[in-house]
Amino acid sequence: MEQKWKKRYSFRLKAGDDELYELLEGLADSKRSEAIRRMLLFACRTIAEEKQESDKHEAVWKELQAMREMAENHHQELLNQLAKEQITFTQKKDPVPRKENEKRLTEKALNDSAAAMMTSFGIID
Image (tube, rainbow, N blue to C red; front, side, top):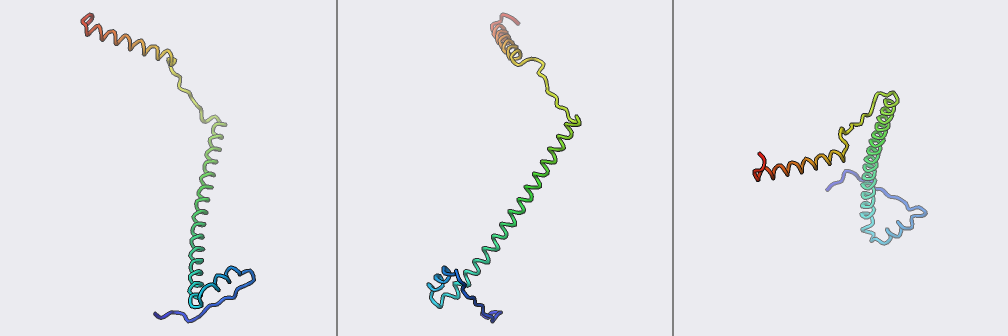
């Protein structure tokens, strides 16, 4: 397989690169170049993935901020309409109080049951 390039790259270790030095020295000379190439590829791919994730997080953050701003605007609009008395709240009143209504239902059920029994025994038509 012929390569498109003939250029070679090299780099020098700097002060503080002790960990990298130990790693490279622990490799056989024939494996060192391939290890460096793989580490660079891994680093490049990792950086690209992190950038994509960062871009996604930024997009979600912007959308969240837009939603928050919209909610705040709607809230303020409602407050303004309430202040101008354009919105009124009405409460539906129950024509018969709940306990009285339950009492009426219970009495009706008893009367209906009694009437059904009397009809079944032929007492009333």
